Structure formats: structure tokens, C-alpha cells
Amino acid sequence: MIRALTLAALIFGAFVVLVPFLWMLALSLKAPDEIFTPTIDLIPNSLHWENYAVAFGRANLLRSLWNGAVVCAGILVLQTIFAVPCAFALAQRRFAGRGTVFGLVLAGLLVPFHVTAIPIFLGLAQVRLLDSYTALIAPFAASVFGIFLFRQAFAAMPTELFEAARVDGLSEPAIVWRIAFPLALPAATAFALFSVVAHWNDLFWPLIATSDPSLATPPRAILYFRDAESGAEVGALMAAAVVVVAPMVALFLVAQRRFVQGLAAGGLKG
Image 1 (cartoon, one colour):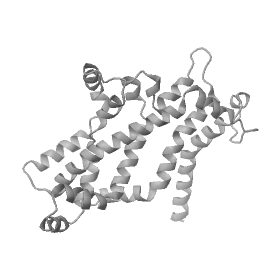
Image 2: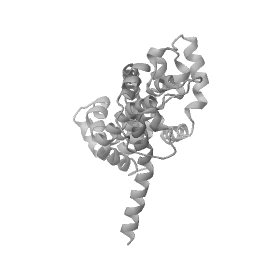
Image 3: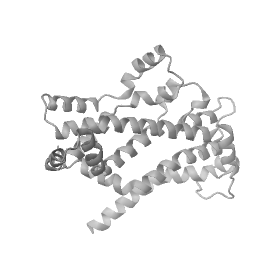
Image 4: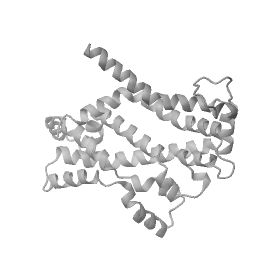
């Protein structure tokens, strides 16, 4: 009985989560006269693929998708380069003030990016780096969440493994990148998903840091369908939204097993 109730609750929860996506997909294939009706119909009378043609033509969606991929990849690479050595030091090295530094990392998790956005914007303006990939990538190069997640993964690994590597003559960078990081691949996958999804969907910072349409990221490209006089083209708008969301859904489906493993490993040891 309890199992049946649990399953029913999960099915209901999945239905609540999926309905907006199904509705978005249905609207992306509907004609304008089918969209504004008093009834909700998830199955279009006929498939209007021209909405997707309008989406790619109006907002230069391919360019925006490329920009999003470049920005997310650049941020992820820099975050990994910074977070992994810091996390390894906090988890496997003994030094004065280690607890204090880790406490500062945890405190950093409480500070939203919006608090520091204005100082970062002013600094980039001073060095004339606005309207560039650098402006979209550099502010996110260091991730306290990444340090925390990798630190938890490294802390769960046996210290003897790294001591043996040192005895064999491996340097600290080699231990970090050739031994510790491959063992933390589930945590790395989980962090990659968090990072890519967060920055792929980010509208706040690209809207502030760039004004050049050629640098528009996917969420900002969707804004081009908004027209104060004629209103939004809902069909094309939903088609663009489907195109923007689809890569993230595919990414999660491909990496979901390692994603769950990474989150579980992150909570093994404090």
C-alpha cells in the first residue's frame, strides 16, 4: 500500500513537472488561431513547422546556441581548473587555517552573484571588456560550489592512496589530475551539469554585460520575439524555447547516472 502511494505521488509529481514542457512543445507546433482558444489541447490539429523556421530566422538562434556553448564550455573549464586543486588541498592536505578557509568557502555559497554584479560590471567597464566573451566568462571562473562539491568527493577517498603516489615520486599536480580527478568523475559530472544548466539559462548577466546581438546567449535571443506593439509571436517563441531547452534535457538524460552518483558521493564525508 505504501509503495503504491509512493509510486502514485511520484507519477503525479512527474506529471506536474512535465505538463509545462508538453504544453510548450504543443504551442510550438500550433497555428496562431489554435493558440488563443478557451480550451487546452496538447495535440495540434496540424503541425506548423514554420514556427521553427521563424524562430531560427528571427533571432539568429544558431548563433545564440553557439554563443551559449562557448560561454558554458569556457566557464566550466576555468571552474574545473580552479576548483579541483583547491578542493584537493582542503580535503587531503594539512595546513594552518584549513578549517577557516573551508568555512569561507561555505560562506561564499550564501552570497548570490547579484550582490557582486555591479562591482564586476564597473570593473569590466574600466578595462573595456564589456561586450565580449571575456565579460560573459571571467566573472564565473571561480566557483565556491565547485570547490565544495569536489572537496566532499576528495575527502571520501583514502589518504593512503595519495601517500603511496607520493612515495612513487608523483608530484602534487600529477596526483590531483591523474589520480584524484578521474576518481571524482561522478562529482565532476554532477558539477558540470549544474554549471552548464545554470549558465545556459542565465539571462541576468548577459543582459547586463553585453549589448551586441552577435553575442546574445540563448535566453537573451528569446527576448527578440517580444514586441511591445504587435505582441509576441507565441508559436515562434515556444519553438525557440523548445530549441533552447532540448540540449539541456538531452545532456541530463545522457549523464543522469553519474549525476546521481556524484551527488551521493558528495555527501559521504564532511
